[in-house]
Amino acid sequence: MANMAVEKYLKTLLALLGRRNRRTHDVVSLFNLLKESFPNLNQIAVNFLHVLHKAYRLRFPDKLEIGFNLNLQQAKVLMELDRTVHEIRRGFRIERGSGRPVRSMFTELMEGNHLDLTDCNCYFGSAQRSSVLRQLNHCYEMRVVRRDQILEANYQAIVTNDGDFSSEGLRPQNGG
Image (cartoon, rainbow, N blue to C red):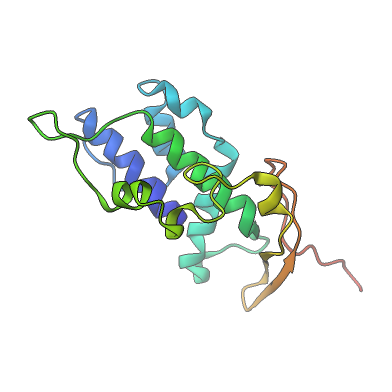
């Protein structure tokens, strides 16, 4: 869902440029099309976009190649998603022809300081990264070992927000 949210934001930027929407879910390629036109996008972590696109591929598990793996840590993913959306949104303003801003559910949640949006949120709320990271976070790892075998692990851990989204999921050792 995070990939789709970022995808929709990026496709909105394409529409603002008057470009035809591409039929793709690849947020990295959309980002690359837009980064020259929207300097605020240069603050987005491209390695995070790669992970989002990789996680989106889980929608089609029968098409995952042997060796495909993923490692997601809730706090890191959510904090980076919030940061990504924050960076995209600060690059434009949606308004009516009269110049009056369009009110959206997002605007309502922000103005009402609703916990649905602001709880544990370092960009749209007042949470501190260190306090979010001190909590137990849900983690998910998986790897396609064979066509008929996918290893998965769900666990809780305290994670570090080091900006690294490239760590591998479940690395089985041969023979043991």
